[in-house]
Image (cartoon, rainbow over the protein chains, first blue to last red):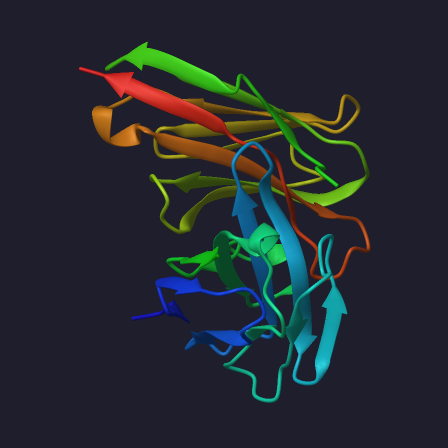
Length: 115
Length: 112
């Protein structure tokens, strides 16, 4: 089944403790993105990648890092999480730029709470 | 920045009625997409309309795009209780690479 897999689904952590949220897709997509979703703010793009070793900042990159060492994986790293990073996170992938062929495929989400 | 803004923020209708949601955006786009999200779950792509298209259909969905007004509408005909969800428009800006910017969404409730 074609899908984007995120792990974990739920995570509670403490301020300052480094964490990684994994994202993997099995569709050979070149384009991948991370979003966070907060009430009243919709989805905001954190980082995106257009291919292996090619990443760029989205609208809210502060406090996050990403890497794209393999085409299928695009982990999101929080080096020192803070409570304002408590949010619902989504990874998404697309075959072509801007989702121009059939849109983006989203993962099921990771609900992160930083206390 | 929020490229797309949906209107209304919330909509409640009876099963069998039509639901119309609107989206406005600010910059030049390559395409506009609509997604559905069931409570707290991942988004599901519904339909995409390119900047050179004016109308598109997919099953009970009809999307229109007016680039001169920078607006789009999503019409769901003969709604069902299972259509209850949040609906988001997303825009891929011209020359924007992999940027896809979402609006804040319309919460649709379809009552029996």
